[in-house]
Amino acid sequence: MGQKYTQITIEERCEIARLQAAGSPIRQIAASLDRSPSTIARELKRNTSRQSGYKPSYAQQLSRARRWSGSMLDRNSGLRETVISRLEAGWSPEQVAGRLTREAGKNIISYETIYRFIYAQIARNKDYTWRDLLPRAKSKRGWRGRKGGSPASFMAHRRPLSERPAVADDRKSPGHWEADLMLFSKYGQAVLTLHERHSRLLIATRPPTKEAIPIAMAMKEILAPLPPEWRQTVTFDNGTEFARHYELHDIDMETFFCDTYSPWQKGGVENAIGRMRRVLPRKTDLVTLSDDRFTQLVSAYNNTPRKCLDYQTPAELFNEQVLHFKCESIPRPSPERRMVWGGGIRIRIGRLEGL
Image (tube, rainbow, N blue to C red; front, top):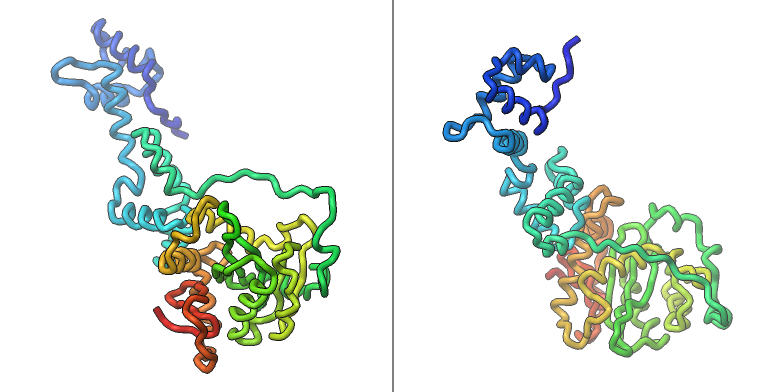
């Protein structure tokens, strides 16, 4: 059984240089290092300079240069451009790698290779802007229980999450939604978000106020045009902005509430808001954000592949299952009341229309 080969170390190269300078033949050098004579001969042939002869440091540099030919992304410019463009669109390395695999029908690149490529650019060039291509690393403990009362104690017609149908738990059945407000630094500014648990689709609109009645009416207008199969339940936290949740009962939707101080029980919409914070940080002034830009941001979210969907996008899955339903018979509302969900479609409340 042959010996396992190991690379020549810098210490061995120093010894080779010393023995060669002393006039030792190749076989004697090999014997002193417990190496094969052919290994020593190859080392001297490959790593000797015509001008300065065999130098340990120079030989080490040449050896390293031959062994490393760059990562896959260094060698393949087309793949590199594709990966970087998708990272710039807000995709994670895992989403990029998974989507490429889905599109090609075979493994193209691993997400670890993408991470290593990014970190290598930072290490080599000290260019920390490469970090902007990676998802924000966030380590934050969840909410803790606080002393004092909760709106849950006086919420009319409130039903706890424990009463929600079990079919909603595994995300295999459509029509089960989670709702929350995405708040901003400017007083009174918020985005109403609705997250569908099965497709992971995100619907977002900018309500005029955070009061309960306008919020309830906005949700009702958003959800009413959907087919009955996609109007089953909505889960809320215990914020007072959802106090008129029972308005959704008019469109045959059941409403349920998380336990107090337990927003993780509607983790889908919490995760969606966390992702949207990458492009809509809390300091954003919604007054300066145009409707078209708002549409683009939500559309980008819904057109990003998800590992949990086998690297389909939420828009693709939603399109497959819903777009055959016709909503053209529903009256068109005023243009200022608009919400978007992407997938190449803009929804005005109660109407589907292609972009």
